[in-house]
Length: 490
Ligand SMILES: NC(=O)c1ccc[n+]([C@@H]2O[C@H](COP(=O)([O-])OP(=O)(O)OC[C@H]3O[C@@H](n4cnc5c(N)ncnc54)[C@H](OP(=O)(O)O)[C@@H]3O)[C@@H](O)[C@H]2O)c1
Image (cartoon, rainbow, N blue to C red; front, side, top):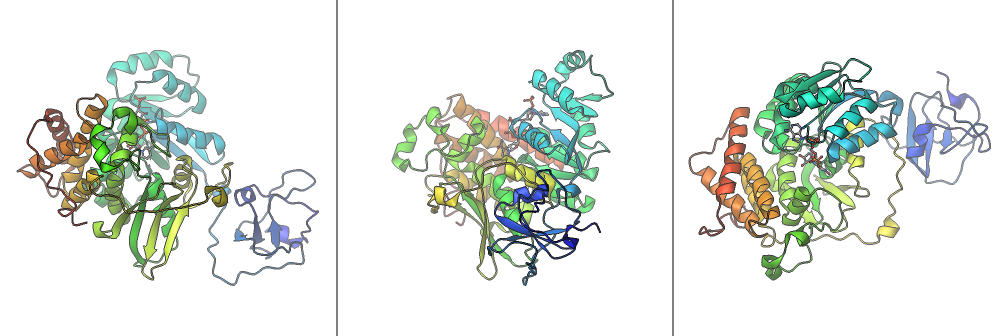
């Protein structure tokens, strides 16, 4: 091995390893020679890669540096930590023109040696953006779902100077998702439209960087056995699930006792319950911490977003609903936590920025450097937590109830919520009627339509039925809140 450790490292003889940039204020230890290397080093002002194949990172607890220091870890620290040279993934992005899609492409721009875009797909409503992405990333396969736009897309791609397979509709999306050359499929499609291509990707043996919520919330009963059968990895991209996923690395099987999902509390976390009948759409769209789309911002206000994440967490980590806790954490610095059997709690922290969890899902099991500012906990100052008020957030208990019921119920909950939020955004219903629409639809579904072990088709049918039923809901209908705090057992 061409090991840098064969020479004495002195502070003035500066060395550089790009990965060191990711670990500010730290030292690394060359596994080849066991010598300490200080971060941010340069050789004669030029970047020089170390020859070491494995580098172990330790948080600096000592001020000593230089060649004479031989630092041996006494703790069995994981060494499979950071080597960006190992990450070379060919990726397909489903929903490339959306928020998740464009943030994924920002990561590709930041780490071009690590990721190559081989496939892009979207709905087709923003062809200008899609075409410029195709020109820039030169994917080998692209698809749109809207067949009315395909001729326009072909016309816009006439001057493309390389071979690119262009697909349309469900077939096109499925071909893109299962493209043989890809390693990883990022699922940034919104809604149940993401389900069929995700199933195709899993069947084709692709790892999934999972953003699309419906995949597990609605499709969980079908997806979970498929993942096991095809032995693929589902890598969570949502910040809360990514936090739990990161905390779980290295935790032995059977040691997990509880997941603790943090919630910002949304737009109305400081609004008294008595004022909720009077809140407006504009009020609901003011998220205190995250800048997101309208639908997800309203879901944060109702805490349905957290309820849906509870269902996702159940499928992702196999945790029973009674062992998934939600706490309101207004600062959104801790993205979630796990509690272990010895009562030790592990938390993952970071600025609220979706690119971080996306990058981890894309680069797992490695860690890649990102040129972001460090999290300054002194600046953050206070981290606080409180129990969610179940009267203020009835959607949370509806989600627990649907998750525990299982089968088609989570798909119904999710679809009814989408439709209710849509109606609220159209100002057809009030803010408090969002949860009433959902409960109305769930009650109707329970009455002879519920399927305990649904097929993919059953789930898609339940989704459509729930949307239609939610549109029929009239705010004047007599209504009883059955899914109360007590009913959900919380
Ligand atoms: N944004 C976030 O921070 C975030 C965080 C966690 C999880 N998620 C989840 O990730 C998913 C995507 O969220 P997003 O915020 O990125 O949504 P978005 O900004 O609305 O983007 C949705 C993408 O899906 C495409 N699309 C829509 N309908 C389609 C269809 N029938 N077939 C194929 N493509 C279709 C859209 O294409 P066109 O618009 O070009 O037609 C667009 O590219 C959602 O399930 C969301 O809950 C999002």
